[in-house]
Amino acid sequence: MRIVVLTGGIGGARFLVGVRAYARSIGAEVTAVVNVGDDVRMHGLQICPDLDSVMYTLGGAADPERGWGRVGETWVVKEELAKYGAEPTWFGLGDKDTATHLVRTTMLSAGYPLSQVTAALCERWQPGITMIPATDDRLETHVVVDVEGERKAIHFQEWWVRYRGNVPTHRFVFVGADAAKPAAGVLEAIAAADVVLVAPSNPVVSVAPILAVQELRDAVKNGPAPVVGVSPIIGGSPVRGMADRCLDTLGVEVSAAGVGGLYGARSGEGLLDGWLVDTTDDKTDVPGVRVKAVPLWMKSEEATASMVAAALDLAGVA
Amino acid sequence: MRIVVLTGGIGGARFLVGVRAYARSIGAEVTAVVNVGDDVRMHGLQICPDLDSVMYTLGGAADPERGWGRVGETWVVKEELAKYGAEPTWFGLGDKDTATHLVRTTMLSAGYPLSQVTAALCERWQPGITMIPATDDRLETHVVVDVEGERKAIHFQEWWVRYRGNVPTHRFVFVGADAAKPAAGVLEAIAAADVVLVAPSNPVVSVAPILAVQELRDAVKNGPAPVVGVSPIIGGSPVRGMADRCLDTLGVEVSAAGVGGLYGARSGEGLLDGWLVDTTDDKTDVPGVRVKAVPLWMKSEEATASMVAAALDLAGVA
Image (cartoon, rainbow over all chains, first blue to last red; front, top):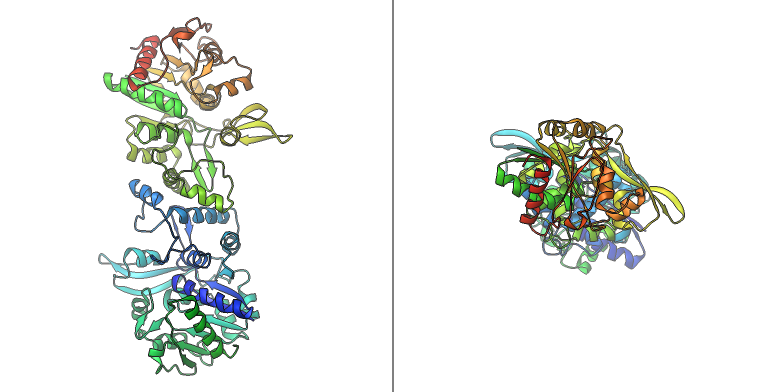
């Protein structure tokens, strides 16, 4: 069996731990297609927060308390940059992380596509799955906001980390998406998949930038594999992160039904065959989509693996 | 009074501490023209060892034990790069240093010349003198060596740090020197100088790359200011570093007389008016050059300031 997962960073990474566990138990192969909309160049370094969150988490090196970055991280480089007055100072650039970014940036400067760079970094981390960025092209999520009385577009990281989303927010723009092609290996993985899972990541800023790559979206929608999503909303609140703020911006209800409807039914304009929601949301209805309710709290690898089993069951491939 | 100093890294930086002290006592201005031949791009970072040694030393942030880099340095980035298998692993890339290199590389990538970048970094360190790289152009010292039976040119840093000079060495090549122009401000400083001092830096790999910039050398040789050098050799041994290996490669005697003769008399093909040697070398004779012997051990700021006073006296400008 081949499982493809469309995923963002931290929540997606935790979901992937369960996917990997379940896949091992049945001898399945897993390919994660990872959001790059959060990627940003800072201090000359190409930073890929979602790829790194997945890589570090599956590599057993993520910080379990903070949720992002490396366990045992230190902050000398960041402090020194601030002492030089080098902007931005609000980004959490760890020393261990800096080495990852240096290796990545050096390889990108030498002409390697991000997908090959990711594969090279994974030689160290051995995530146990195949990780591919959604695209090797530039695709950045920008956010149209009002800051100090001025309407402007800022990078997603500035919106998320600097402002914590606490600014009047009008819309999200996936810069470069029009021209972006799926990274090498993405279309092949989707074509060969027995099932495509949409991780319980932020639908607006983690999953939507992936699907903004038109050929990738088309491949999922028109491909042979059933598509099952896992709700990132439980009982009206995001499992983690700021999906509520993002959904508000789009005018979408912060509920399992709201997000399910945002993705939509594959029989219509959308792409879901099935939608897995939490037991507290067992009344959820998404027209044209099979809905199933199971416990969705990813409190352990085993609990998450059970979610994955339920998702595959809902897809009809378990 | 205006004092210009041609200088390399660590030894030159210690000399400059004395120059600054003496200059303060007489209200003089100091401009250091700093070697860039050691500069190297590693892991995507533009590293300027001599500029940094001078900047950190005069900024009170140099490590006094190790001699180079920052006091209280940590090595997380370097260790992580090694875990990725990222070459080279033999270079001492500290975390604090990394921030300096990131700021520098970002500014260079944005189009600022190295001289402006250096001025920007010095806003933090307040060295109390004006620091200018010899050139804003690429000028790198490479070394023609035999390694594993093969003759090849390696970067100076590889020769110095990785091999500690312990490889059959044929010559030093200043790549880019033919086309390199003096950095902004260098010719003006030399033209306005009351005296030009040559620091007790390595004559072969610290001072020679500066003088390899033809317009810079011509400005010193043909300028109005007397030129006095300070011997880096005391009693047949280098004060520090590997000047002996470098001089051996050129077939120059490792002595105060040997180095004085290498620089040569301004009345001939060379550029020295005066040559300051240690009291143990008081028999030193350099044809056409006034030689004076004083204690040359830079064991304190005061001792070094006394050397500087003697050098200015020898130049006839004290």
